[in-house]
Length: 242
Ligand SMILES: [Zn+2]
Image 1 (cartoon, rainbow, N blue to C red):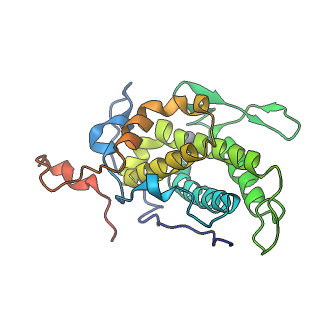
Image 2: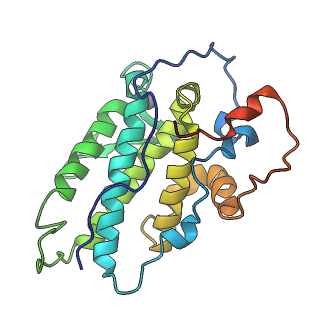
């Protein structure tokens, strides 16, 4: 069976708007770990169940469909802050204290800025997911032997992009009120790569603190009615569909 490869939830809102937030004092602690932000999601889907391979669906077909969808969503999420991710603001592709380098086809290490790195990621993934020999869409066409290793590579790079948004552009994401989308996307993505062991645990360590908070609570969504916090900021726990 061929699965249609498109998105399941949409990114709502002003992707072009400028954050209007005043500049908060530079802080050492990670803003994205603040409980008032980590609890923000756009849906209460049970992602743990959602990522599981459905019966009667071919594994490669499932990996292809999900990987393509994540690529589109992560690309879209990055595009909301891309105007702030410049060669000056992000001179290297950094996530917390980890730095990533791009490697060209011959394995040569390339030093690049974050926007260049993301561009390398997005264009090479785009090339793969639209290559009929790698991600076949036609009935009867087989997946290549290298398919799983390519999916792993794609997921690793998509993880870098997500992690960079958190570590360097969370303030802008917050100002755009898109942190609920980011958290939802991240949770869904992490549970997916975990389910199929797609990314080395070493690779994701850099974001373990966030993963712990977002993914362990996923499911037992504590958005119950009797939440006593009544400060005015509490109203933005959910980015509502409008
Ligand atoms: Zn950046």
